[in-house]
Image (tube, rainbow, N blue to C red; front, side, top):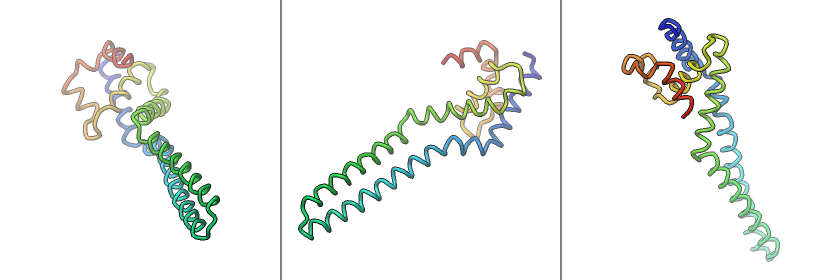
Length: 154
């Protein structure tokens, strides 16, 4: 691969990340959705516990115990959803999804899929303030075919 081809791929990847608002939203949408469901389960559990208190005051103890058990089960479900959303696996899955969406967007711009995928993966791991061009100027040995294959096999 020539240096000009590499620069073109780097520019395309950088442009995709700068203008990729829709991709960011698609990646984060599921996290917001499940977080919203978890918050709604906590609100429902609180409401049911208040109804259970009212039932206990009205001397309907069986109904109160049943509603309290139901509220506990719903709150546990919400807690499990929060654990799922905030876990490490979820973040890794988001990175994989972002990589796949950026690749799908850029796959027609180059014939070198290995270099494109490796550069997208590199850009995802870099902080937002550092571009691929900056990384290439600092460490050009990371931008070789052999290094791309190594990065893909990690």
